[in-house]
Every structure is written in C-alpha cells, then in structure tokens.
Image 1 (cartoon, each protein chain N blue to C red):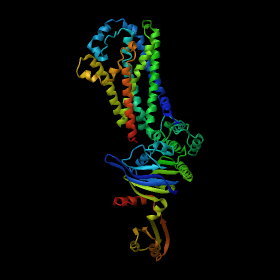
Image 2 (cartoon, rainbow over the protein chains, first blue to last red; image 1 turned 45 degrees about the vertical axis):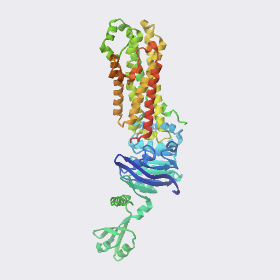
Image 3 (cartoon, chains in turn green, brown; image 1 turned 30 degrees about the horizontal axis):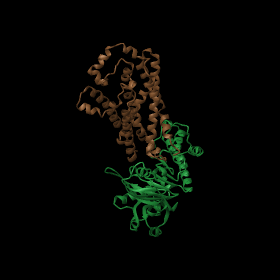
Image 4 (cartoon, rainbow over the protein chains, first blue to last red; image 1 turned 180 degrees about the vertical axis):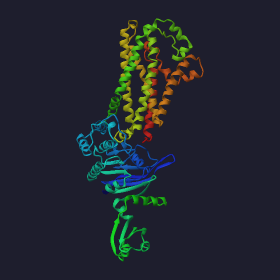
Length: 304
Length: 270
C-alpha cells in the first residue's frame, strides 16, 4: 500500500432517495496497491457508494475522483481503467461465457483471450457453457473474469465471493494479492467479516448510510479489546478482577474466569500472578465483535 | 472510438429470430392482401359501402379514391394496417432498448465499459431501423411477387410499392422512439408500454373519426394524430408526401432526443 498516492478520493458524497438517506456525507481515501474492505450489513449503503463511483447513479451532493478523474464528468475515459463486479449481477442469459466476455471485450476495444483462458482455468470455469445453464456461483465467476480481463488499475467489487465455494474463494484471494502486488487497487464490499479480516489492508465500516470507522485491519484488532480466560487452582475471586480498570463482562465457570480487557494488560497480569495459574487463554476479538462495538457507539450518537 | 457498432451488431444478432418471424408475418399479410384483390374487386357494392359512415369511422375518409382500384385497395387493406401491426414490434423493441437491459441488470455491466450512455440508445435505434427496413423489404418483395402472379394487377407500378414501403418507415420509427422515450421517463416498462400503445391506438381512431366530422373538437384533435400525416390511401398513386414524411421523421427524432436527454440524466435501477 502506497499511502502517498490516493487512487479513490471521495469527498462528502451523499445520496438521498426522497426522504431515504442512502448515503450521508461520505469522505474517504483509498490508496494505491491496497485492498480496501467496505463492510456493513445489507442496506448500509455499500452498493449505493459503488454505483455512485461508477456513475450509474448521481449524487445528491459531494463528488469523487478515481485516478484523478471525476467519476461523473470523466466516466467514459475512467471506465477503461476500472473493473467492476456488480452485487446484483445480471448477465445475458442467451450467451455463453466466451460470447459474453468477447462482447464486453469488444466494447473495451479488445480482449486478451489468453488471459481470459488463464483466469477461467484458475477459477475452474467452463466458458463454453451458456449463462442460463450456469449456477449462481458460475455466474459469479464469469462476473469476476470480465472484471479482471483487461487488467484494470482499479477493481470495484460488490460482494465478490458471494456464492463462490471455499476453494474458489481461496483462488480469488490469491488473485487479489497478485493484483495488489502489481500496484493495482481493490475496493471490495462485503458483509463477510472473516474475508475482510483475511485479505484487506484497511476496512471502512458503514451503517445506515454513514461511515462509522476507517481503520487498518491490524490496528482495529488491537485498538479495541480482547477476551481472557484464566484457569486457576482452588478458584479465584471474580470481584477482584471486576475492580480492575479496563476489565468488564466478568463471568465465572468452575475454575475459570472469563473477562474482557480494554487497554493495558499489566494490572490483569499482576493480579493473576497472585493465583496459581493453570492456564491462560487470550482471544483476539472477532471483527464482528469490533463491528458491534462500533455500532454500539454509533447508537450513542458518537462517530468512531 | 474503436469499439463502434458492437452494440448495433449484437442487437441485430439478438433480434434475428424476431426479425425473421416479423418478416414472414408481414410478408404473408402483404402477399395475401394482394392476391385476394381480384375476388374483392368483383363486388362493385364495396364502393357504396365505403361511403357509409361506419366504414369512414373505421378507415377514414377516402376522398376520391376508388376502393376497387388495385392501388386504393392496397392503400387501405395493407398500408393502413401495416404500421398498426408493426406497432407491436416497434413498442416492444423501444421498451427493450434500455428497459430490458435495466430489468436484467446487464446495464450495469454495459455502462462499466468505456462507452457513453447515448451510444446504447443510438446503436440500438439504428439496429431497429435496419430491422424495420429488412421487414419492409421482404413485405415489398412479397407484394411484388403477388402482383406478378395476378393478371388483374398488371397496371400497378412496382416502383411505387417500394416507395409506399419507404413511406411506412417514419411512422413506425416514431412509434418505437415514443415507447423508448416513455421507458426512460417511467420506471415501469408495463406502464410505458401501455401509454405508448394507448397513444398509437387513440391516434389512429381520432384520425379516422375526425374524417367524418365537418369541424369542431375532432378536427382540432386530428392535428395531433400522427396518422393524419401518414395518410396511406393514395400512396401507391401519388407517392410520398414529403412534407408529412419529414414531419413524422422529425417527431420521431424528437422523441429519440428526449429519450437521450432523460436517460443521460437519470439514476439506473439496480
């Protein structure tokens, strides 16, 4: 990731449908060579953002540039450098995979058939099959191939692994790593937290049309909290832990005490040292828990 | 623009079966109507029937035209009906230009490529024009074949059949661009199709009813009926009325312009 070079620059982007606020005042920069995960539940505004970036819908306010080009004014020139996989993928049912990529390739001014064959092979896709005879997973593969086939500088992928089987998902992750290794940039939306955790450099969390947080995946994991389970001989007194700063949600089960720690670990370790510790387990929170934490703060009115 | 014509070619290819069946359908109609002429012409009383108000209401005022002449007969029985039948083709095609791609979700893929929105409408409209010319050419050939097979029709100028077929183009084009424009404004394809069909049918009947009236509201309304300017009855005798031809063409292109304007500006449905 090259933080000197902003590839996607979003400034105050807002989209209202009548009284419905699909996206509110979104400002965000995505850097060259990173995989940016755009995370949120259904209806959060992920697809709205993506369709604004592709000039399929027009903003109520704000603007965005990709590779320095205005997404609305320069959309035709810009689309040469973008690969797009729509979330609600619609394909021409009567075409075969090959016909479809050749048609889109023709509109792009040419197609590298060798590269398409290579992608199809890696994704285990039979491109001679008609779209109408394809499962949703196969359609997704065709969608991925058409998004990747012209080796675009920027990939905008809406729920790319939806419907892909786990093996193909791994291939997809590998492809994304190769793309960013070449200095190209990926903006992908997902509601799959594990996926984002696994492949993204940074994540933006969106809820109800508002960006709640943008964090590096690594920082996000550290910044919040972790779960500790302490197994001690002869039992321990939970209330002693409850009194510590940064400790919450203390529960006791047989010889074990489980609690949540925010901030420094030192007081916990020092207190634990007074007991005969049999085992200590330390769990990083799942992104889901962090996610819920952010939403909790969101509800209180603050913006993380 | 090294990718010009890709959508045009794809559209024609995707409509190949539809164009084939419409060519056969309208061609058979042209052939049949022509070949039955000698049987109809035996009945002189048809001309009396033509003067009755009921007939005028259905077909409009024929003026000095002789229904039992081959040109008059074909003017009414083929060239009056042909655009109304082709309206079905035109409206379905017009609604499909952006509507079908939008409903299928393929518009998102098309517009993710480096092509401007107007290219979709323009290339598909040109494909429609080519499809229409193919259908009318087949019909013209079918009519010519029928004329050559029928000694009673020996007097018909075959060149005028081609002229009369060309004369159909602006009317049907206008029907297509009307449906296209409505589909870019209204979100529901059903609604757009219904309104387009309503306008076409109303236009036809307003024109034929108004032919009976001496003056008043109907006569005023008639000016807004594009059928008034199509006026097919005497086309095989008099040829194309260029003023009317160009007027219909201009209205059709105006609808196209409106479609381009609205489509360029609006949000695309998911």
